[in-house]
Amino acid sequence: MEALVNGIHLHHVQAGNGIPLLLIHGYPLDHALWQPQVNGLADTNVARVIAPDLRGFGQSDAPEGAYTMETYADDLFALLDVLQVERAVVCGLSMGGYIALAFWQKYANRVRGLILVDTRAGADAPATRQARLDMVEQVKQHGSAPAADAMLPRVLSQSTRQSRPDLVESVHAMMLRQPPTGIIGAQLGMAERPDSTPTLPTITVPALVVFGAEDVITPAETEGRGLANAIPGAKLVIIPNAGHLSNLEQPEVFNTAVRKFLSANERQ
Ligand code: MLT
Image (cartoon, rainbow, N blue to C red):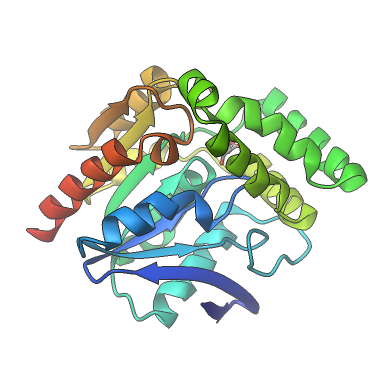
């Protein structure tokens, strides 16, 4: 499905009839990241799953320029309006988590719960920011492949890499199909994102923090525990044998945690 928001077409899939659950993918990925949740959560009608392709990714339009986390949040706010969703549980993985926090900062009254997956609240260190700008130059010259090749070895756990060549291949293909304009827009936007750490104690809705135990990009023991400790009442789930893409690597465990969270949310 397509929605016209903020002057661009945003592609999204929807499934199920339960609590609206907005799933925000990471970089450099698209809504297909959430296929196990679209299948596994909507099936039982626990959730009305809404999985968009962010601007610049998947089948959504990819305008030129930096995509700030606030811009992405504005797009998603407009999408919820088009879909007539009053309040959603907002779930974001990695860059999707940066966006979920930006969404909370600006549109808290549209949020009924937050799920932060393999992400962080802090801004980039100077070296990370520089690496993003270097990647932008590489993508301008060579297309999406340098971004895909740099990310692929870091996003999956060792066990997934050894036992699931099919999954490794499909994640690589997902990264390779993202347009250079979208990758550049996301890198420039992430490089300038502010520190959201002061936002964490302001979160007044139920929150779930989910991390892969083997995540090397946003480690569970530091980033995951840090988020859960800073958000009032947040629950932390650390998933064994999973890396940065924990929802894709261990979908059953991930979906069970989300289902439990949604059931508690339903009663509120
Ligand atoms: C992601 O998975 O979205 C990225 O690791 C985010 C980032 O580059 O900071």
